[in-house]
Image (tube, rainbow, N blue to C red; front, side):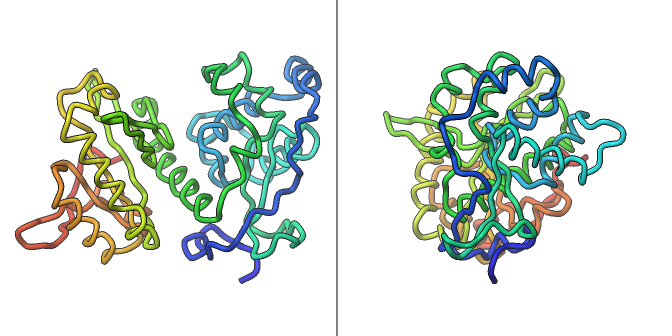
Length: 314
């Protein structure tokens, strides 16, 4: 395999693959050019929405961005995915609002445009986000293109999975999905941990919170124990209450793993800890009907059982 051609290849991408960017990151982008383009209409509300989306989620494919705009009703009647690609590439080349990259086995490989492309925010996009969005200025001031965008191939894979799940939730819950935060920082006993994401669904003035953790097969040994210990400390003490103020129960923990063997191994590890509310799913299951995607662990039988959740029904 040289470069990736489709998102299905991401799961098995070697950790040695690296990003090849279309543009070199620079701090010399003209802010006045971006501001002028915004106020004369050359940069549109849709461009701002895409920039804000990538600020929150870091990386996304063309198909994911199109789906996001569709679900948010931000596409014009005649917009197609082909026209969106033309627009995004203009934001990359002309305005440096966005950048894009491919994943390749060697640093010195040329940028092959027929590869799977990933979009990210560039400095021009940061300038575009001042004032018209709800993002705190402090978050924008601390953002740097290189720090935000240069990551391992496995980190890119994780981000794409997070965006996929977010879009599934947005499709099901719409405006009742009132919060989805990738890489949420949480603390307990002065120890900071970062979870893959958390989200809230609010219906009829009732909130339900979830914490999501993505654990790949390669991370079961290196990352799972630390993740599970952190989850135990958060949900079995009062640590969760400072993040989820309007509920009486801790959030449900959702673990996303590669396959059924890994799911059982994760479930066995969680059952040894004081974590009562957890569910587990796999890459294959979460791509289907979410109402039947999450499994419950039967400790006595030492097996995972499929359940059906009306909560995740569309």
